[in-house]
Amino acid sequence: MIQRVQSIYLALAFVCTTLLLLFPLFSTTAVSNAEGDDLAVTAEFGPYGLIFTSEVSSIDQSNTQYQAFGNLADNPQSGKFPVYLTFIGLSLFSLATLFLYKKRKRQLLFCRLNLLLHVLILAGVYAFYYLGTAAIKKALPITADLTISFTLEIGFYLLLATIPFLFLAIRGIKNDENLVKSLDRLR
Image (tube, rainbow, N blue to C red; front, top):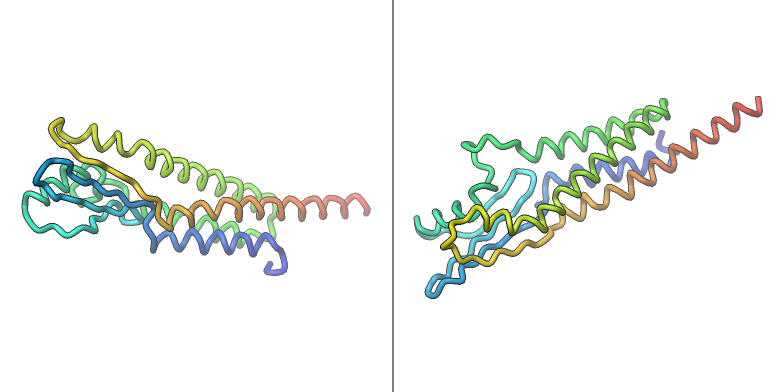
């Protein structure tokens, strides 16, 4: 198992996906443009949903914070799906693919499906990165005057790094399959 290069690539994909449980995907900041208002709300979106990282010193700031990001926040009342379950599922899927080394066709199928899931999740995060500002401003009251900015964090790049590893693993599995087919033709 370990002597095959695709096992190394699948192990690296597993490590990157597991590290997603520790790092946020992106952070967002909302700064008030109103005169005399120095409100700045910062939140990070990671495996545990949207977590506010800015200090709240008053009830008004807390209300504004949840008004700005309330529809995105992962609070118990919202009943939203926890993101960490997705990352755990992707990690286990990569690990299962790694241990299917005796069944190359099934390993190739799982690896392709894993690559597709990673690309879809990455596309979703990337789309929200660009469309999130409009979604937040649409959810805010018309009178709110906020400047909202997004910043990609290390979790996004870890998610991005798994795609080449999975692609290289697919190439290695195909090469093994072709080698076995060529040996079968010689017999």
